[in-house]
Image 1 (cartoon, rainbow, N blue to C red):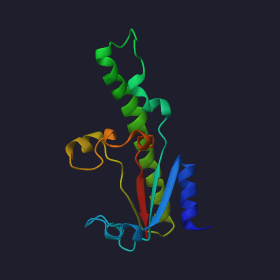
Image 2: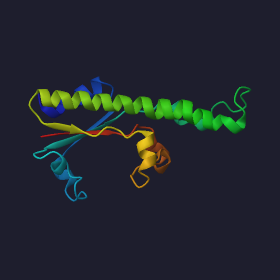
Image 3: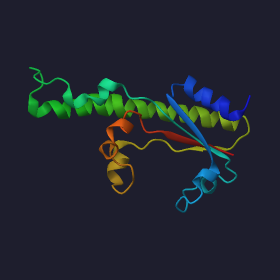
Image 4: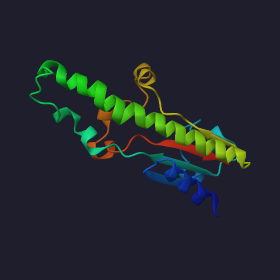
Length: 155
């Protein structure tokens, strides 16, 4: 079976909702030090994938209005921290990192050098204010319905 199909099936089997593969030529013109071939000499392809965020998690600002347990002054912050940042960010990004590591490990075990970039932690994002994308609010809502993708490169 073709390696690309095998990896895409493996990613989906590990929980990826969306999978894409591109040849490294797709990145011609990338900024210096960001082309896959500069990161992994001999790279041939790049895979990106994402995990769908549950619809109701994306509607977190509207939840628990009028709750006797969450005063309005604290409700939005509590939901952002407990629901969105956990269910819509941390858990999904941890899972994306696990999928990427499993794919990269599989590639290396079958003789293909590989590299992946883990999803950044919130602390990293706060410390790198010029790093894009830095905030989920920077992305239109329709695109935020997918956890940010992780890329795996192989040669």
